Length: 291
Image: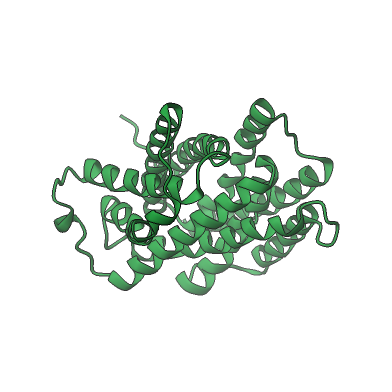
């Protein structure tokens, strides 16, 4: 039987992860109109704990939580918490596809961070692609136009936090299992939101319970898949495939909210995508020359 190359397997897992999180985010955008953001986040964190225990087949979380990198794990978990809050804050005030398009600068930020913190080789071609991608991001946001307003700062902050999260994941994944990292991802969120629950908790009604449970299932499954993807392939290789998320975001935005990205958003997204694909092409050539 033909086996997938680890890099190909990583790409497949990344694409599957994105399809799950796209669906989860669309459902979350619908749900946060009636429930607090923190309530969705705490369900997601609980989903991560359950999924981690299922993946590891370890019923005792105290055994699963053992790690050689407690400092990095806490930092990564804090990024997960802050990233969730900034993302959902943006999701509440921006069109779905517009928000996802802004997040497209993430792969280019990851490429730069992978060079600085992981010593992944990044030549001037990729630095130029990162600069061009930033231009694309500015085209989407259009600072000073007033069209997106201050709401655009939320996805920008989410991008920075996500990039840090990915770099830390890549750094410590060789010493920690997927289940271990899933469990750690939830700890800061659970700790902070459990303490804050008297100030935000609302009792869900029937359909809200269903929505929260589905969001938890989809997002936790996606998290596990993306962790595994980054253990199989370099961060800079997987980064461009995040662009496929615009397909689902546009579809859900149109079907559920009759939203459709304007010309500026599409133009900026295309600029970023082309820059990212150029980075991917350079990766392929570098691997071919090295073999």
